[in-house]
Image 1 (cartoon, rainbow, N blue to C red):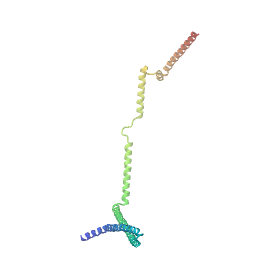
Image 2 (cartoon, rainbow, N blue to C red):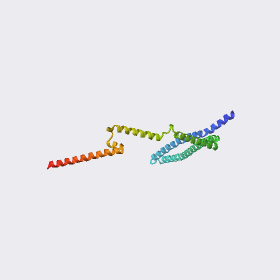
Image 3 (spheres, rainbow, N blue to C red):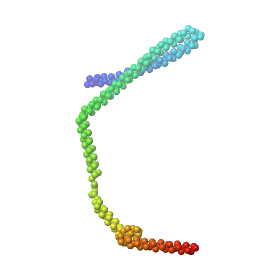
Image 4 (cartoon, rainbow, N blue to C red):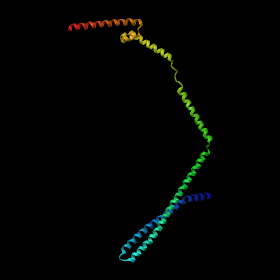
Length: 225
């Protein structure tokens, strides 16, 4: 139990160390940045004093310039420290991100190993073969369902016979009622002998009508003279 407690505390401490280090560095960085701004203000003040005294009091102007140089030197050191702290913060953050990323990748690898530990290529091949068999079976069933007629096939010869009978009945009905059947149609459906007689009568009637038309035109011409 004690070992578990201490072990857990140690692991948590290792996990918190990067965060604590970054926090300490940022606090020190904030302090140095404040010092940087203070030194810049001091330099500006000493520069103003030197300019104001350069014509009236050269020793005071010289002393002001000397203090300005000292502040410049301190500012350079402070800037170097700030750059170093910023670089350390960046390095720790990058290292911490790499550590977290690596831990996540390890966990993912362990999970994949656990999953694949219960799976073999033989199992995969067997499963895929069963799936293919089921697909083939489903296709065969579908083809059998769609190709099997639900009703009895229709006898085409019987259908043609019935259609011919209906046509003959319709023709007989039209022959009994000549008023509804055109003359040409009646002629086409009469026996050959009857058709010859009717055609002869029609031709004679047409010739007679032509003669009457000719006599009428002749009479009109004589009257016009």
